[in-house]
Image (cartoon, rainbow, N blue to C red; front, side):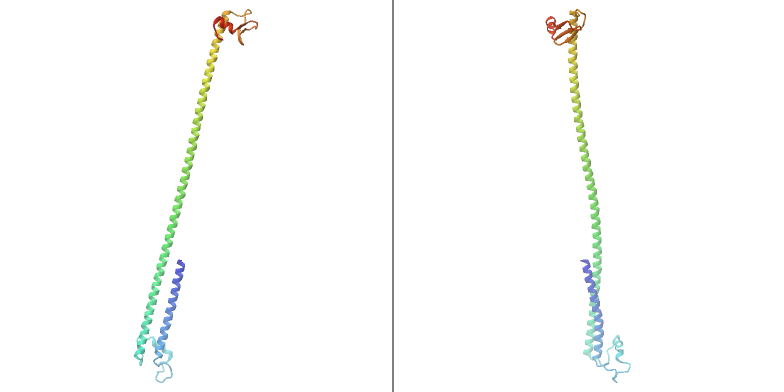
Length: 240
């Protein structure tokens, strides 16, 4: 859009230059016509015209700063003056319009530069915001990653804790089981020792062997003598 407006301004300037050139030509042509309408200069051989006042001298004579030629009627002179005023007004209007167009072009150029500067500023601001958003996004992603890592570590710690508690519980249960087993073994050993004591009270087998628990009773080391648990219970009151 700015390029189109600049092209229009350039075309208007060219039109003004053409009009100004045309006005200059028209001014000279009108001056020549005004001079010729007086009847002078039509024939350079006219004896009333001096020899040095030929048609070849017309432009110099017209360009004189002042000078109403002798014999120029008032109406012709007034018409000429009006034509000059009109041409001057047209030149003034053209100059004014050209100045306005030049000022408009300058304003347009200033506006274009200001617009470009604003666009650059907005682009820089946009780039800054994009960088800031990217930084914040990276920070947010890092925060999420750290939070996920924290949750993972917390979950791992919880599992470790649960495993440790389960291990301790199992170890405690195993300890209690072994203690109970040890207690039973000790009790069994105590009872066995008491029975051995009672058996020793009975005495060794006739062959002198020790007694050993076998099945539902006790047999001597030689294998030929046997005392049942029931016999021990009936005699000594022990529940073997």
